[in-house]
Length: 344
Ligand SMILES: [Zn+2]
Image (cartoon, rainbow, N blue to C red; front, side, top):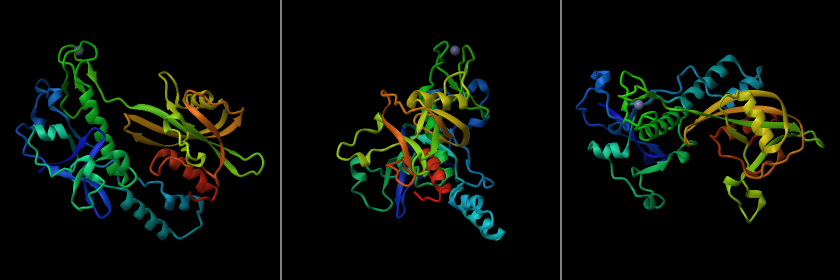
């Protein structure tokens, strides 16, 4: 028996539970075709696909998420016993690891076309007013990121990207022939005429947390910028949202070079001690965010006015509004604050 998550663009079919919205998996009817038995020449036409197999778990149990309890371990190696560490790590695994029952996702259109039985789905306008437990609705993935276990969130992120890739990859980009989905466990769209294979693309994007001690007080500061795309909040400058410097990696460029170039372009300062920290897939549309830290080395801030309206170093004890918890920007800022003994 196969179950599947149902997605519609960047929204996921969820059921309301006492703890919030939770992705539902609906039962799929028995398939007429055994996909695994198809030969390469019988590959499925792309337009019939809109169904993807996901990684069963994107957070294997040996991988411990770097949450606060783990940071305590690193910053206070003498604190607590080995048993405490084991308990904390076990806790981190159980709260962050998730193994899906079924690892399949389909689009809403696929579900309709294939007569998949769906629960009653609330319209957008009804979602706000409905407090009924068990109500089902399509919920934006952005709103789910902070609530779901990391691995489940990772699966849905993968589903959004793969389903969109299938939708957007229906013709050969070399000869314009309709492509077919490759079988034999390979994620590729294949041209039956010229054999060009098109794979899902990931776009690397660097994001950098730049620090320096406050020249007057010595308090650690972090560089934050207000982007035009965050919008202008006219009533009070206090509520403007700030973020880190970020940008796409250019063809032929190293990640370290991208960090230096983006920072020079956007705020005109020089960096030293550039270090990679961690990464986060970001399915809007298909980015891999690569998080770095760096130290300020010199130069006056001159903002790139096309992108930014303001940028400055802020004391970690007095930050403006920053990106939401769960985003890599928040995690980078929180890590630096934590090292300074500051809880956000
Ligand atoms: Zn072709």
